[in-house]
Amino acid sequence: MNDVSFRQRNPRLVHLIRNYLAGIVLGMTGLIALLGYIGLEKLYENANQNLERTIRDRYKAEIQHVVETVAATIEATVPGEIGPELSLIQQEAVKRIIRGAKFESSTMKPDVWNGYFFLYDMEGRCIAHGAHPETEGQTLQERKDPGDKLMIQRLRAAAQLPDTAPQIERFVEYTWEKPGEHGKFPKISYVKRLRGDQWWLGAGVYVDDIERTLQAEQDKQRDQKLWAMGMAAFVLLVMLAVAYLVSAGLAKRVTRPIDQLVEGVRRVSLGDYMHPVALANGTEETQVLGNVFNHMQEKIIAQVSELTTALERIRELTSNEWEKVEEERRRIARELHDDIKQKVWNLRTKLDEALMTDEPAAQRCLLNGAIDVIKSMSQAIRAILQNLPPPVLDGLGLLKALRELCEGQAHSAQLALHVDFQHEELRLPPHVEIMVYRIVQEAMMNIVRHAQAHRVDVWLACHDGILEVGVQDDGKGFDVRAAMHHVGKGQGMGLLNMTERVCAIDGEISFECPSTGGTTVTVKIPMLDGDEMRL
Image (cartoon, rainbow, N blue to C red; front, side, top):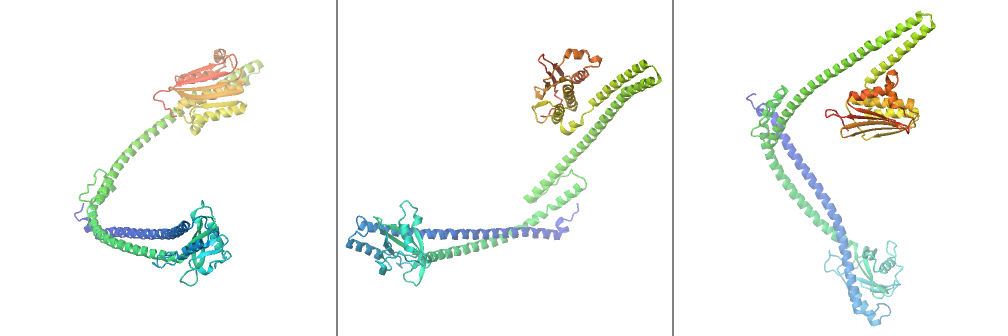
């Protein structure tokens, strides 16, 4: 490793790292500022919405309170039902209460008592009015506001609502004159029936008073928001200054251990994985980087070892597979040479002799011998083919291959088929799978050819380390003992083949043919500990 340090060799890179760290800090600070600004704006927007709703509800609650208070005062002053049946003195007392009752309709103008009350009967006649006494005695139910709404009728309808109706429905919005100002303004009034349900009382607040109060509160919130943003900007500036100082110092600490990391990378690039990097006086991040680098070296060493072992294993398996393939080729060649070739020679000899003789009896004898040779050749070829693994096993697996085999045979012979495999997936050693497939194939062929059956049941199960395979039909059955007795006479070769296959792997096979008909072939194979059985 050179004596010149990394910082001395790469001053521009060190400067770039310092600027990069400073840029990260600046970017994070800017992001925090942006998120803070967005959060404040969102908070301010939500606060405005909530504030408007709160102020409006507060005004409504105040109007409802003053109306309920005046109504309670009237009902406490005048006994009995309140209506035209009252005496003139009592009616005048009620009117004085209405005319004299005032309240502050705007918090923006304290001590300005311009809120008033009004009293009407159910016919729309004004009984008393706190702001327009000249309307007393007039029937105003047809009066409309500038919005062409029958405001007196709407107020009366709200007053006639049952006591169980929501209070919010007793508020009515319309346009009306405002005391002390010119023109008509939107207004929200609350109405209530007095005792006896003949007169109703109401009062309201003007919407512009609500809006002025809302604007004042919003101005306060805006001032608070500006103050909060100013404080946040000040804090961010302080953070920027501190972050810059920290990043400058951090850049110096980061570049010190980089020399060691560069040297470690150089060694790894040359294939030297046995020298871990030890970072001294580094930051926590560079220590983590060094640990990750050393862990990477360990992983590389482990992977190289695994790959080397796997490569040796692949070579060994490939060699074994080629040996198996060559052995299988030699076996087939021996069988073809020792058996099939000899039978072909015998067949040719008998046919030549048959052609050379003119005696019919001799020709018949020679041709019968040729037929026997052909049968023997067929059996030999069949034995060779049965020892080869069926291609369908590799493509589908044992269970799917068996199901396809049985369904095809049953369909061709118009047999009802029931298949019961206890497992959806089952993998056995290849020689066991071939044996099971061939036995089921032989059993199905015997059923199709000889049983005259209508239904076939095939099952496969594994329990207690025993593989059980069964094939059952409802055909005419056969004499098992007689069939096995005539095996040497060219009959029962299928039974013999199945028996020999099962015995070759230490299994058991049974043939059951009850007097009621049908045949059941059952095979039981013990699975050794070394055998592969994946369920």
